[in-house]
Length: 158
Image (cartoon, rainbow, N blue to C red):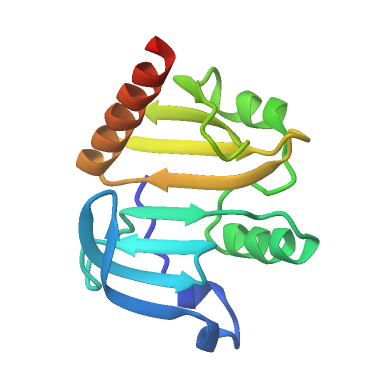
């Protein structure tokens, strides 16, 4: 999955809300990001990289946030939408690689597709999708998948 979209290109007449950071760190990799607050992140290793390394949508609870993020997902030609529940995501992607229940009361269904794409879908207590993280860079995807699984295994062994 090679996504070439820039966040600023997804938002008509609203490019002034997108902030650029050239020293942003994502998954222990320093690179270029486009941000809307800390809720929406588009990350590349370099600004000139044609493809996204990662995207992240966090804490998407309000109707306005859901509508805005779905607009961005639609501009990206993604079939995923906020408002989907666990059943819809598992119908789209199948059985998860593992489920993480971290400290923040969000249940995350985690996938590693063909050892190339990491995906984490976070669900609130009401089982609605409130978080999406996808990493498209193969090295980053494998590292994040393994390190989070090791952390999960460590906590489960206690």
